[in-house]
Image: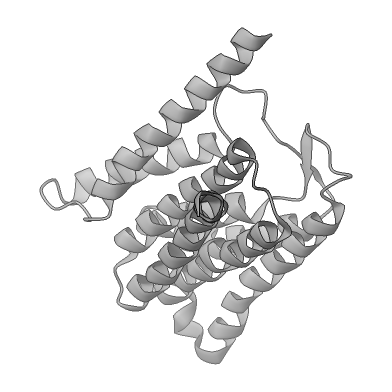
Length: 233
């Protein structure tokens, strides 16, 4: 029984990531881009935790790896693309739908390529932009669309699509004392809070009250883990 529970813990993180991605799509469809963005942010933190939980509990499995990729396609491919569609591309009708669909397609290709080359990949760089980073950046740009030139979002959209499937070497930044994607998550949360505070000082998106405690738990865990690693050396 204990073994079953241990095996299930990392998968629960992954499935939660997938569920928050689904919820983000639903909120985008209702025009609530703030909560849609926060749900993607929560998904980024959960995505960074599931693999580490599996290694910590020593329950890595092929099922977990495949499940993680499927969750990433939804949360960091489909959900950001839906935000971009409803907030910008919808004005182009069927063409807008087709263009928005490119993001999860390119992201899925990038994930498949990463999965078959994971053993060969270097710790110092990624080949192409990871879908998690690409989805986070697209979500941030969508949130700030009203404060930027309208042309910037489609340019960034297609640039990220290209960078995900490109063979350009992207520094992994793993030596920086922040966890995986920690820089993007930190910038994401800081910008989101600033934007929401400026617009509605007394009405924060309610999912922000989940994201902030999870963020502090996320950073605290990573810093403790890093300190232990340094002490062992």
